[in-house]
Amino acid sequence: MSGGSIPRLVIAAPSSGAGKTTVATGLMAAFAEAGLVVSPHKVGPDYIDPGYHSLATGRPGRNLDAYLCGPDRIAPLFLHGAAGADLALVEGVMGLFDGASGMGELSSTAHVAKLLRAPVVLVVDASSQSRSVAALVHGFASWDPEVRLAGVILNKVGSDRHEELLREAMDSSGVPVLGALRRDGRAGTPSRHLGLVPVAERRSDAVESVAELAARVREGCDLEALLALARTVPELPDAPWDPAAELAPAEGPAEGPAAPEKPLIAVAGGAAFTFSYAEHAELLAAAGAEVAPFDPLRDEHLPPGTQGLVIGGGFPEVYAPDLSANAPLRAEVAALAASGAPVSAECAGLLYLSRSLDGKPMCGVLPAEARMTERLTLGYREAVALRDNALAAAGTRVRGHEFHRTVLAPGAGADPAWGLTHPERRVEGFVAGGVHASYLHVHWAAEPSLAGRLVASAARSTPARGATR
Image (cartoon, rainbow, N blue to C red; front, side, top):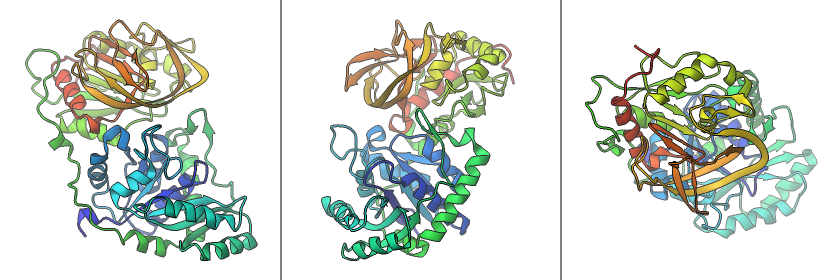
């Protein structure tokens, strides 16, 4: 089987809340338990669902976002992530046809399904309907003839009689029923202010939840029919995305000789910093860095020899007291930043570098205070780098995503990280020395020069005091 003909399915729904994550994760786990190598993918910018996908399959959960990365990169990124897999399952986002606001189908599940030439299985919440389910499915199946809606999984079915009525109605729709799952709260996944609780925060419970989802899917879905459907896909003509090929030689913002060995880039992880795209570490490594993970909740020191730092998104507001209590690490982060070494911080990382978060002392790298609010800031953004910095050259244009309930005062420094150009115009974030800190989540696969520039800058820096190897 060639890489372009990897069997694949897109798991979609008419709307959010129908059970896409339940079904997609359960299918991934069930097929993996049956001995298949399953590649998990998620439409959109969400970081949390891929954590459950990874737990179910043992492979990195990867995002496919046509807004952040561009439509032309979707198939190559898919082929890169799914290399060597027997089956690829792609969980959709929101409703099947819901995309970036005001931009038509861009970044919708339907858009990604068309780019992947993949059949769609629609998960329908059947809890409050019977015959109407056929009309609903008919509408979704006929809306866009380029989308191949090839099957339905009925979710939240109430009883044997309810299932019988639903199946009778679906007989006339022309779309086969490939599964029916009963209402069951045993495998529920807890949520809070930004969605599901990440796997890293409840790993043992999450393992049990995923196992229960696999059992439910095995019981209620026709796995043989789903696998047969996945194998009907045409070949994709694209070449897999290659992080090394994406990286042209990059010049860092500072002059000086390159380090004689690979610069070490420390990447924050653990329960407080769970938001990261798998391609970021791959790009850093392809650019010549040694990538070293560390956990700011547990590790009192940066990895020995750290010359650059990446702190992604997550939930520092949940762990503010514990992060604050780790004073030795906060001091090392501050010292590394003061040395001029490159530090890239997104959202949670921005908060961690601030003076305080909800009154708890943080690293004090940025002259700003952070606090939780009730207001959700959410949406895609377009931005431009206003000046040369350790991450981006002046004029670099990116697309990103904001997703937080915190505010920072002030919201931008004397040298902002980005000038937002759409859907609103404002400046945001901080550039100071080697630090680039912002609320904006950016997918580096869309702009690999970010990784190359960060590594080049790290190669010219010296480890902060106490971080030697």
